[in-house]
Image (cartoon, rainbow, N blue to C red; front, side, top):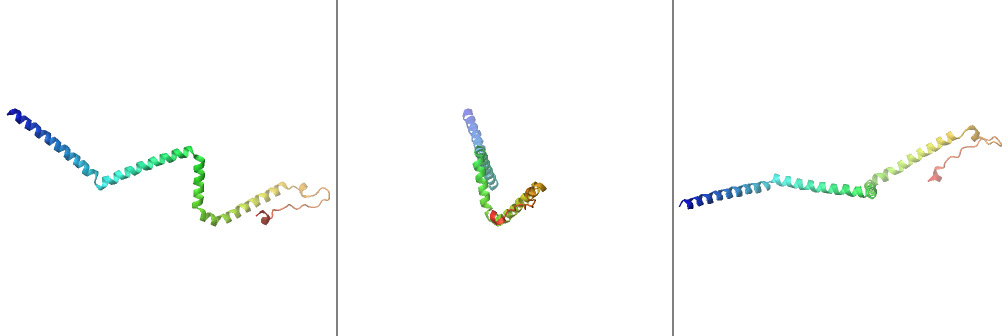
Length: 136
């Protein structure tokens, strides 16, 4: 009878341990499906995917710098096409005025009194200026 009693006690102990393990697993499962835990798991997975994507992009950029840079510049120009259309004429006009000012300054710096007069007849030679309509 003592052996049967010891077996029953051991079976009851195993049953209690199994029940405690099942309750622990159930609590873990409940905690895993709370809204906060689901949000945290989703954030972790999204961040992991973003990190993987960023690593792949960096690797591709290291391997193909020039084509990707050209594509990025073209994409940026396409995104900014409306402001470029609006501001490009004024900018080209300013650049052209600046270039004309630089060439005028170079002509003045390069012209000396000996250059301005002709050695044969002593007449003044007027410097040639760029015609804006001919350049365009």
